Image 1 (cartoon, helix red, strand yellow):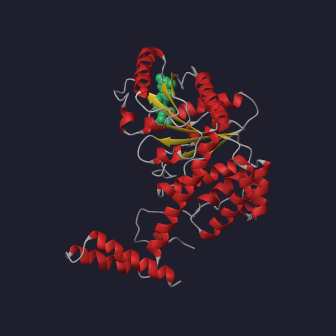
Image 2 (spheres, protein in one colour):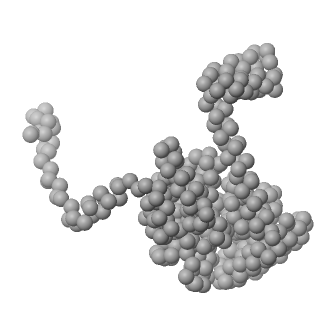
Image 3 (tube, protein in one colour):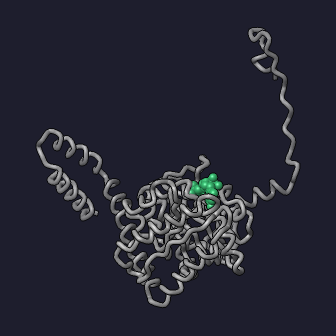
Length: 368
Ligand code: GDP
């Protein structure tokens, strides 16, 4: 058929008929695509994960991250079935401001860990602000050049943007799946801004704070309370002309840490300098983490922390579900608007309005 733009009205514009697109050059490719589309059963997922099949694991994580209720239903069953095989990894949280060198360091730490034996490493991330389409995703494979090519490393970017609680829950569930798939070291990266550190702190056995010297913010972490969470502080970029400055920063941190009360683990955080880019002192950082984990496993603090975390996440889940149920109860939106109006007209107080709305919630629950 002639293209309408070849009409006389379109002078000077000639549209040629296109070349018919060729069939697939590689016939196996289309077969592979078809194969991928096959739905997996809960059993398939669990067995695949237990086998350490990375494709199945990735698909299970996608289900965990999905908002669709039917995906969530399968995901929850898979997680439950994987739970008995989870818990055996060392979970390390890694934070630091953008530019501190988190991805460079994770690449270096990860390669070091993998060189120590036959273990497997999963790198996950919590970044509620992330959008998959943007380049700045934590845990992005391209930012960890060596690890992304390593057959025993599994790298997964943060679940795409959503509430912090939601993103963090998905990462916790992904940890369970990775552990069931035999990953015995899990890194969880988070960016050093906002509340996401607390979420990551509450899912790891060791929380590592990466700092840099010379940025004039040596003690910045103290203000934000992040130092209080750190089980170890490392000053990155201790290379070239920066070595002395990094050492001075380390002294600052050591002094500052003396002012903090002794952590529940009974272990005062160590402060080390290293270079992620030049692979300097990476072994020392890993020894610090391993040494800590060995000691807290003996003194009981490791199990205590995991128990505390289980409880913490139960209450987080309750909070999240309560809120969601509260706001989605039939008539709730009208009730809220009505009381907002009364409030703005000065006919009620914030507290009284809240009580009335909560009474309505109670009645709706009792009427179920
Ligand atoms: P992130 O934003 O915390 O993940 O930081 P990146 O790993 O992307 O690093 C930020 C910048 O610092 C990059 O240009 C890195 O090359 C550089 N960098 C990271 N680690 C080191 C290091 O150990 N020494 C030096 N000199 N530069 C580093």
